[in-house]
Amino acid sequence: MVAAGTDLDREVIVAFTLGLMGSFGHCAGMCSGVIVLLGRHPALHAARFGWVWVHLGRLASYALLGLVAGAAGHLIAGQIATLQWVQGALALLMASMALYFVLAILGRLPSPDAGLGGLTRAWGQAMRNSAGAGHRPLAPLGLGLLWGLLPCGLVLTALFTAAVSTSPLAGALRMAVFGVGTLPSLLAVRWLARRPWAATWPRYGAAAVMLLFGVQFALRGLASWGVVDHLMLGGFMLW
Image (cartoon, rainbow, N blue to C red; front, side, top):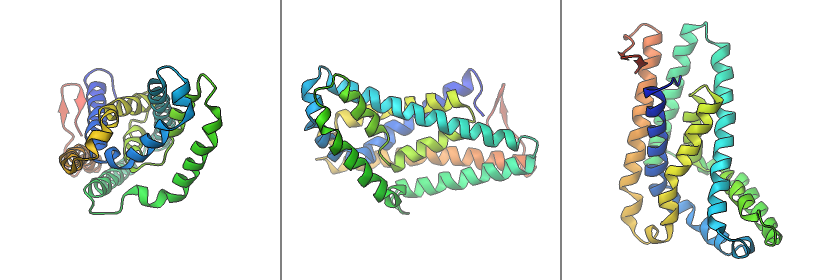
């Protein structure tokens, strides 16, 4: 679904905006404990530019996850490429998922994080088990890779957008750009955690981005069924 030029530029902007806006409302609360835990890890005290390596590892994990999600989306799209009504149904399913994530971001429905408690505990245990790697030069990079695999509702939302790109490279790019978008809030998380307004307006911004994404796919699904017309802007199919 991602083409060259304007289409790709738009998807990159969407991914960055989702990371930027969503992280101020989500990561400021969820990742503050992770940052404190990492800050006490021997690896960061033993390495130069430890936090840089940590974030590079996190972005690498996101890109790898996006690669897998995009490949899965490509495989599914290839199987149903000749079935227009199935394409419409899939687009409407994606729109429904987007609506769920919107309501979860706004606190109206349970966050996807709620069902990931076991995986989160396993992640925490892996982090604690890595404490003996402080003397290894690339240990902070490994910690970042682990951080990127931490079960997280916002990351699941971003992976959803990577999957619908139906391209492994586009999925990896979306997730890497999403990760870059989360950097400002994570770099300022200790400051933001003390200010309650920090978890309000960015949430609405992230919800708005995902809602627009869902509306686009709903209209694309209805257009596949002939209910509405496809809308083209130049060489780009808006829906």
